[in-house]
Image (cartoon, rainbow, N blue to C red; front, top):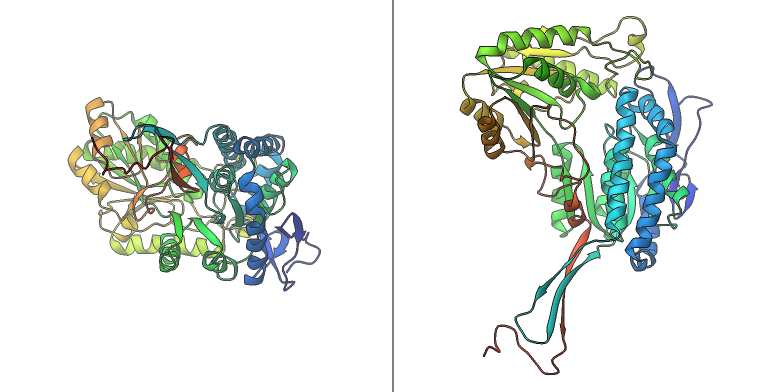
Length: 497
């Protein structure tokens, strides 16, 4: 632990408190190795306190009219606007991505908060005609109770906003575990809601490792629903735990996203989009483009353009204005990426650019990896099937639209995909035939907007969606209501004239 580092606390029942054990853990800047602060290394006993606070706050929060709940969330959005630059700069220091991207991360939370706050005036159910006379039939949304929220480090404000804000507007209370690599940003995000006037216990945050905090949160009997974003392996394990006790869980997990480039594509546009999709956030996005499926007629030209652009990308501290690509989040992630590059070489793929740690000068203090492109990649190679989560992408040659779609769909994941073409017929066929939750035409695989559902097929998730109105289904229960004002017993499906 670094002496003199600023210390932070959990937020439980409207109070900032340390872990019961007194244990702390360090948050470190991945670009410089600098210690940014100390946060509680919490355990199951701290989770117990937070869940109890959320459970006790739930009855009053549930009875607060949804428009009143939404007014608090609107004020939180206003506070996010006022503190956008502060949060963005802290995020760059804590997880590494460049300042333009962290500003976008906070803006996404602003957008989500405004959008969902608007739903507080609606939270639509629906009415329907009854099959019996003098009888009303309609349905409403009801909150579930305490929600456990576990989020990753790559979007440490945006992704929590996708979960926390909808959970709160529906009338639930929340216990939030941020990623261990980005606890400071999570604590500052919760501070925003405190400033906005959220009542004590409605939102609580407990920092700490997955084993001590995450598992206890998932297992707690008073947690009615869990919302998790992270690795497929962890998500499936948590789903198994929840299934044993009939607990609802919403999962957003891995991706092995692909872009198809057809012979008629605008290669300049495709190059711009693919460089951004592959190397934005140092490739640490669940929507990052890690497979480029290109028609053989244009493969050589596209590969040349991609390599030339990748060589020009500047690595460095994300706070520096001339930096294009920041560090990866940790030494362990750096090692993982390099191991996969070695796997690609062993499999016979041809390395076009990159493939090494960047250690010269100031870069040696951080976790930097050079933007990497492989060619001659077979669609069944490990580097074409397994999620690397780093600045590595593959070029896979194809001979037709049909074979490109087949290669794209031959993945355990199904999050995001794109196609570059000027042929509207090919674009529409791709939309029909690609098996992913998100499809882009003439754009990369990243860039979601908050008012559309976000999520994927196959092992990317378990059928739920974040964003859009669809996210409200994760955090609410449907309640059917029948009001019979006939004054007599009427039996549906039996009393028929």
